[in-house]
Length: 599
Image (cartoon, rainbow, N blue to C red):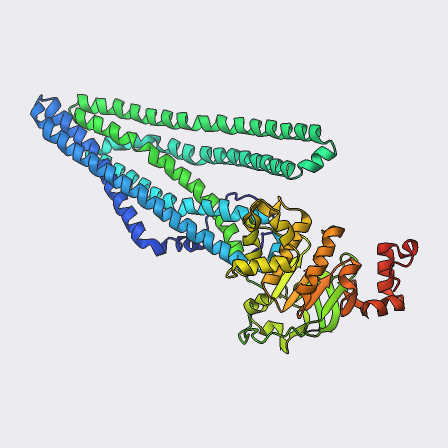
């Protein structure tokens, strides 16, 4: 299948694909009973709609013209009964279709949501979260409209159209053929003109998307906008966007406003033909007046199904595009999976060995080259190096966010690819520089790593890393609600919550990737005390620039361009005055500060 995931595109029309349509229909098949009820109610409603003009014909020809008004009473009762059946059937149809649509929508979104969460970091490296969000919401909604109301309503329109044609041909073939003369014009209006309308509204949606994105960007970056005095520019830019959006909206509205009157005009022309030819036949005593009225009634319900079928065709083409985009995600195969012989990581000691490991995100550009080192249980391994040297790539291989492209990683005597991903990650805790805080309480965010933890466990974890002091000062303590992404907390406070979350998980292996970079000096003293508790009896991997975070490490690895160019303990590496010494000298300006590393 052609991989077009990386393209930033909207769900435009695609040619009809029978195989893709068949795949879509499978989402409806589990709900055969709902489908059956919808079709039955639809058929009954359509039948009552087709019968009603016959009541009019009988009333005029049998009762009104001959002035036999007594016959109108039972006819009115029967007609009221038909309308009652019609009302009940359409109500049942509407309810059933709504339930069916929600079931299909739930299944599609759930499958897509669960599948995306099963994919690996390579997928999220390539696809922005906004695109994924759009496909889960917008594209799935397009498919839902097609699979639920689209299919059922189209079936209803086909039944109505076919039934109306049959009734008209049965009543008077000549008059029916005359009324059909306007069909080519209606087909053109329902396909070509409607497609042009859809194209113009698509342009409007794109302009609106740009406006929404500009809104979001301006709001998220409000502080930067104000700090650099860009308010006037942003106002002008936004004004240009809204003016452009208004212009394309007017064009779309002008064409849309043409469609309804054009269909009405075509319908009026067809009705006029029926009146003209019907009157001729009536004057020649070939048809009755009631039949002419019945024909006009049938015509009133004849034009709308044709228009709706044209709309469904456009909806179908858009749904094909949405289906292609959704199935592109569903057809993505996770690159990190459990081997058939994989077993659980049950006896956890934390002995980790990188054995001549190579890794690349793409085949043309290796990121890690022949990485070999060993971490004994309980040891702390620090990784230092310039930005982009490969530190984070090494750390990402430990929990198998990616798989090695060469060599192997051995954990407690087993290749980590022979350990189930689920059990591997349960024994590893990760703290990043940018801590993600979920919308909820402080307690919920700490407990995220172990949902079954008690309140006492949560409090103990916070106390262990020094987070309890600021939590107790909050209005509602551990029950304080934090906004999305923890906007009510400082960077240091978020990091302390991340440490508490990690220690609550009680991991065998701890990974700290620039975890203290956002913490101020005073907070760092608190964190350092908490780190001692966090690192105790755990194998830890630490990537950091701060000396205080790495000087106590059992082993320091200096990474440069994806290779280990030096390793050892802090004092020995300083004494060697090699790459490690030069790195720290450049960072902390050793020459000017004099004696920074003394002792």
